Length: 247
Figure 1 (cartoon, rainbow, N blue to C red):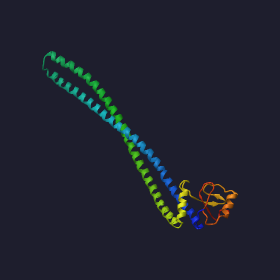
Figure 2: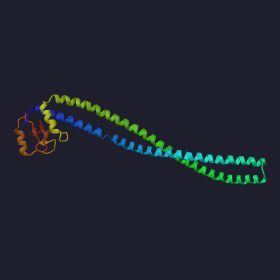
Figure 3: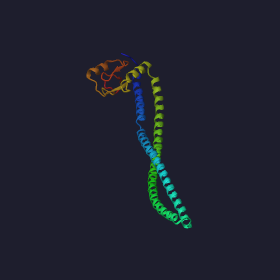
Figure 4: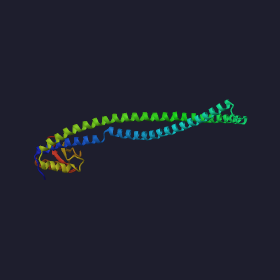
């Protein structure tokens, strides 16, 4: 049975307390609500960015359609203007002038069709530009939200880091006051037991597993020397006797 001064064994409870706090801080760091919020916001922004790229590509396509429609209308208008000038000048034979008149009528119909197409493309352009602008606004809003949540995350992490530094300093101070062999035993015991290697015996109950010891175990503990390092029969943790143990 390992031995250590009773005062050193009781200091294990202080060591356990700081280790428990360190574990709580590590858990808090890993489960910050800002982390989950950031993951969701960043995923949403990636989806928005993909749709925005597609929307801007569509705007470019429709802009080219509008430009082509405008060019086609301008070409027909120019041709009609030239024919009108020739017709008004009266230059050419009657047959030529009659041909120009027919062509002007055909150009007028063609111009009407092209202008209708141009109007459709312009209306379509207005729609896709509006959709792209809305997506750009959403992207900007998401960027602002991400920046805000990131700032809150960084503040929380800084707070955790500051407390960790203080707790680690306290842990070092406590460990320096405990027998090295006992600390080593404590570390060995707590590694496979969820980080809890030492527990107080309080009111005949192990604070590690929360089970009450039976009469036989109590008798054994009562008979043990104060420097004997005891273990809980149920959970295997170092059992530290205190004034509240009920022995």
